Image (cartoon, rainbow, N blue to C red; front, side):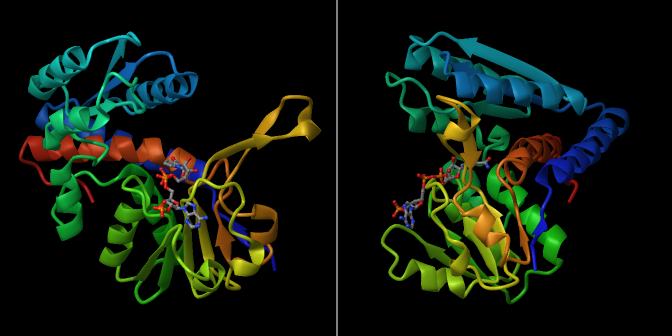
Length: 296
Ligand code: NDP
């Protein structure tokens, strides 16, 4: 049996439609236009693409979009000053500093300078703490998008064995918190995990967030399991021509699709959910800043 392909692109489109509805209600019922500020430093081409996509989608759902492009050699003090101004700007409800930043800037210092109430990436210690103890606030975008796809696919996650491969602050750790909240039994595996293939074989839900192309093989997957492939890896694709590349996930898709019950493709799975969840977080922060209950 071949797995169902989970279409993250179309789910994200639907989510953006619902977000546009929330934006409209905030505008008409409360006079609030949610605003997202994105700061980019330097000319990294991948970051430029992400930031343009974020700005475009922010405007498409009816939010105010503020984009700040700083030169590669900007000082840390200048960037911190911009963050301080955005913290105080009433039109801004979400602040995102695109990482990585050039080496003269300490990224941790910049993240800590963002006021937690506008930290739509959920990077600040205060918001990580809220996520862990279950208080309302922004939720890490990629894990939130992955959770939405899982709920849509499986309904309840209660009692299911979930194995997350990867323990980064960006993906693995917040993913574990979200799955625990949904009453899954969670295992977090990493580079020191012994017998990783066997650990993954016990999983009803596999979340792959490793950053190693096609590392998780088809025979690691329990028949019928739901596989969420967070990995985005660019690999050579000589079949497309000299010097060409293609994107693959952390799961060997062609093998896993023959075993799993459902699986996200790369591209078109988790990736499109991340920006949509950034917009969802901006609705959450805009609501909380104004003393409103965020939409669920
Ligand atoms: P990190 O490099 O920060 O973390 C990778 C994790 O994988 C670490 O915990 C590491 O373990 C673990 N790991 C590395 N090698 C192995 C191995 N051989 N066996 C088991 N575990 C291993 O990556 P991120 O979490 O930031 O990203 C993971 C992937 O997700 C990347 O491909 C990235 O591009 C992608 N990504 C996609 C997003 C999207 O929007 N779809 C958003 C964010 C990331 P240890 O801690 O022991 O070193």
